[in-house]
Image (cartoon, rainbow, N blue to C red; front, side, top):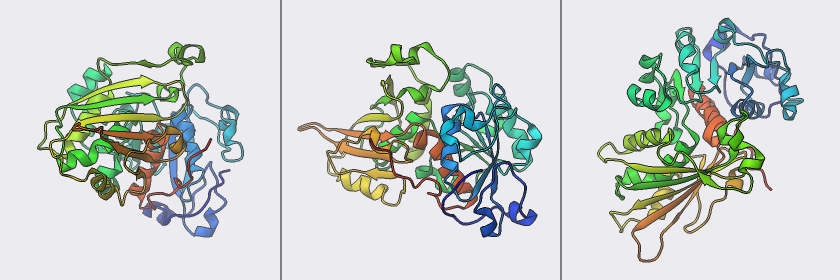
Length: 380
């Protein structure tokens, strides 16, 4: 059982041609529509991203989750592992099954890196659309990907077929995509924060600095000693300061915004003793001091439903976007300096992962872009 609210627009042509299908997730609203909902599968459903997908899809009026997989928890009810989904999900985890996944319209991969690349080709060949929330298809240079992820890429031909799923720069490509590479969480906050400056060419792109801070959920749900409360609580530290996997993704994305500019970003991430949220403080040296930067940002993001530009000098808080698919940002400049400072905040599990994946799904299937993503943030 899934309780959903509202309706977007339509099901897929394949669904309408074949009529209603029998699914493991039921939706009480479906008979009122006169068409079948799209059939979605989630591979890797026991992590934070998987449960966040389920939470958000429960509020989507056009999607039925047909199956959710986990080898380790196969047979266990989802709401037994995640009681927050009681009354919203009556599925049990099941072992991955190629035939079951191939019967879906869309498959989300909420898996560790180097998993989706083994299965994506067969699904795509069967007409299934794929959204990969890992890093398997984010980088366009195979050698760079293999250097950062320490393994051979087994589907290099799909790297160039994948559409990078940052809607604010790639909306038209996402609409026609069969395979979407969902951006990383840090990469989302940082690219959106720098976007207007790079597009307008008003900063020195070779000396960009990104100081990122993330809550512990960004490290995943696996048991890791550095993430234990006794280890991470009452503490604050950098990690991967000599180079982070999101660095090449960030630079690749910024170069696409203005191919004529030589982009280089110094990116240093930090672990904050909180559960959710990313704050990225971004620094760039202005080469044009005549531009009204507040107007530049407001104009660039005026029609973006999930980017909020606050008044000049405001201080965005991570709690203001907790549970919400929003990137909120504000600009600062200290007296007598040519450095522009951008503070950009997102929920790493929503706009940084599951929410952005659903935003991409909405574009791919012609739904309203905000379907399932309209709930405000959680406070306190």
